[in-house]
Length: 61
Image 1 (tube, rainbow, N blue to C red):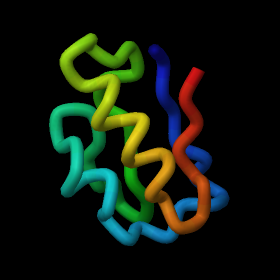
Image 2 (cartoon, one colour; image 1 turned 90 degrees about the vertical axis):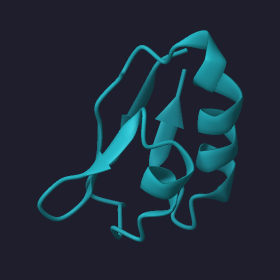
Image 3 (tube, rainbow, N blue to C red; image 1 turned 30 degrees about the horizontal axis):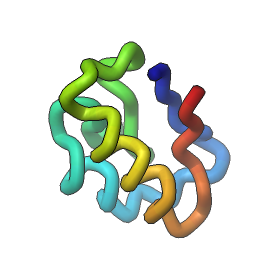
């Protein structure tokens, strides 16, 4: 699984960083992906964060 953040949509609510800090961190103004190739043990959590994102800024593939 790969993940990225659409910085134009991100509102910096910190939901993803609180759910999966191993993959997401806060940048200056928006969340950033620190592990674009998601390790297997975090795929469920990243999928959940993508579903929970209030502005659908998390893109998984």
